[in-house]
Amino acid sequence: MIEKTTEWEPRFAAFVAEEQDASDTAHDEGHVRRVVANAKKLAEAEGADLAVVLPAAWLHDCVVIAKNSPRRSSASRLAAERAGALLRAAGYPAQHIAAIEHAIEAHSFSARVAPRTLEAKIVQDADRLESLGAVGIARTVITGGANGTPFYNFSEPFPVTRAADDRTSIIDHFFTKLLTVADTMQTAAGRAVAEQRAEFLKQFLTQLGTEIGVPFSDTGRNGVATRRHGSSANDAESADDSTHIKPRLLA
Image (cartoon, rainbow, N blue to C red; front, side, top):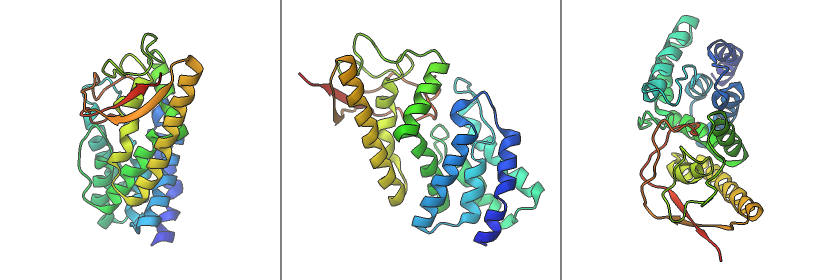
């Protein structure tokens, strides 16, 4: 079945090319292909069914809704419905389609749908890895820049005495979301990769602090509410607003 599933990949790629929104640089074909690559590695490590994981990873963003749209939280449900229709029309094995639809609907932060299967957990983890490491930094800066968000708050670059607000600072998005992502991973394999990539985020912030003359040091969570919303202009994906990472400035 693995061989038969991988034979479908050119068709999945063609679906993506037809459905992709070229204006959304955070969810372009490169993003999809990286999620697929992540999903393959995690599925191998966790023993997940590629007949579900691969189509779900390829088609997870086949419907994209603007971040500032009130319909944003419906994007993954609409993508699941669209993917299911595409797969049925293409003659994909029917016994897998419901699980594929669930994995797609559950991948999104903003939908807040708990993944019920190993395959759904794999797809969610594979997508969330895109928020971390070098790729996560690049996507955050590209998205924030495209929306005209300043790089950082000049009066207080890292949110120490103020609440993080990623509507007004790209760097604040590290504290409202990116540095919390590793804790949301669903699988052991995904968590291991996420923790390594999260360390790279901290290295970036440390280097940034050195360059702008405001040294950075992470001290963990403090539970202070953030000034952000699910449709944040900087967000490559919406996240849980409940916590953020608060840094400490070194003397």
